[in-house]
Image 1 (cartoon, rainbow, N blue to C red):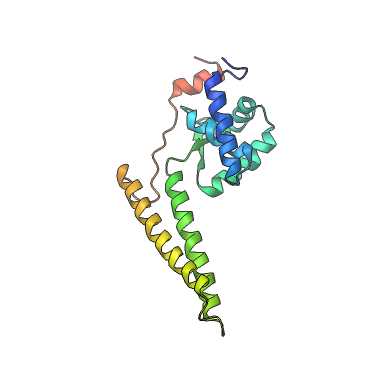
Image 2 (tube, one colour; image 1 turned 45 degrees about the horizontal axis):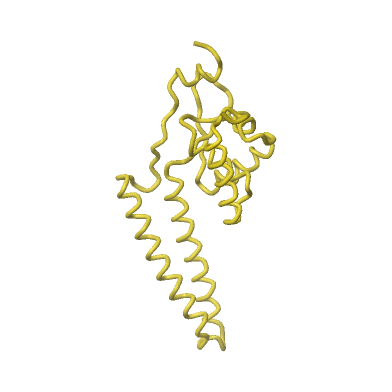
Length: 175
């Protein structure tokens, strides 16, 4: 067992997730939070996340908000408990694909607008970028459809569950 109550393997995974996402432009703590939530069998309170990762609650709060914006983390609640809990959003990957499609569509519009400007109609690089964006958007849209079909989900549906009362009791130390 590690110092946090997690195994050494779990701690290595969480740290690896932090480094991976840091390379993707996400703060390392955000990647570590995602790693922890991927391993969690039940929703975790902000304070629990901070304790397990050995970071400040303020840092967790800031990064949780960013992860919620990206669609990979969502709030959860436990009846009778006023704390804020969080879970990995089971449709977070769907959302990531949708964000990528939106980004390609926005880039394509920018390049199309530039092509419409006088004197820029023959810009090969701009035309190639528009074509690439169309291709990439089509591929990502198809990937998103296949991903949802794999889990028989419709866009925007969620598959997370609330913890059982026994999980809540374990956390609070009551039985």
